[in-house]
Length: 385
Ligand code: UDP
Image 1 (cartoon, rainbow, N blue to C red):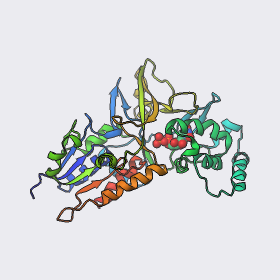
Image 2: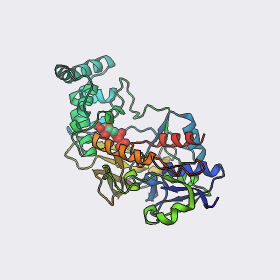
Image 3: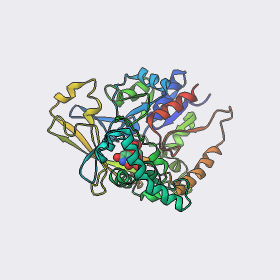
Image 4: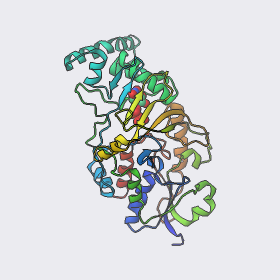
């Protein structure tokens, strides 16, 4: 074989690093490149004031897939951090998330599941009747979905402002499925995720990435598109994890993304907000949430509270413009249609003469899909089976 590598992996994020790890374990020759000065993609952490700061936003690993959980824990042990965000609402009060008995008690003073259920039914009635009278059977947008799921008060206090800030679009213009990932529970349980396993790598996410990429050749500050002519011939297969529209030179126009930016500050207090994640659900507060990073690690390392300082990040959500890091795909109908055109181009790329794929597209940007971390790992594990 003439090529120096079996795989050129474009992007050292979770998809690329997991792929490289599994390929390397099977004796394949891998080169991983990334245009950023560090590996890890958006799970990269930067140490500030002795604290692992989630530089591209809070990442909490959660899955019900034991194989995925065992795999990541074989690279680095995880703690049992449980995500339970608190929301500061427009009415000035604090509410527990996701929507559960604590939230309902705080919102309406209801104390039992039966009382909460009655209140929820009353809250939903108006929306459900309005939709019925208009002959609508399925919610057509996020607002209708939220009103049917949880009713007016919670929609107004905890959903509308946050969602419109996060997506920069009206709830009536957003797809209903965004909100379906939020559980509604009639128990006093603030755990945001329904999964069997959840946690943060002990020592931070960089340990996970470093473990995955151990003994693998990595080139940083290397933009694939600046070196494509030299890079393409050196590997049999390209594993591309960047934006799919960029790969095809924006032939059908660019896809839209949301970007988040962070205002990170060191504060002279050991504990600023008492929780890792506090959402600000009012439209009047410009940021969507404040992350206080030390709480992710505190569970098995209580000494983090002996650190007299803390690091917080205010998270702002904006529309993506060229030159920014894309974060969330915007899965409305316009973008979905455009993505389909790119997907057809991708599928038309001929395989290598030996039948192996010439290019594999994977991950959030290449598949234009809102992925959590665990499904990415699951997908790569499955591919190697
Ligand atoms: N959401 C909300 N209020 C909140 C938190 C979440 O309305 O306080 C809704 C919102 O529509 C958001 C979706 O739930 O787009 C998913 O939010 P999550 O914070 O889980 O997304 P992440 O950015 O963490 O992936």
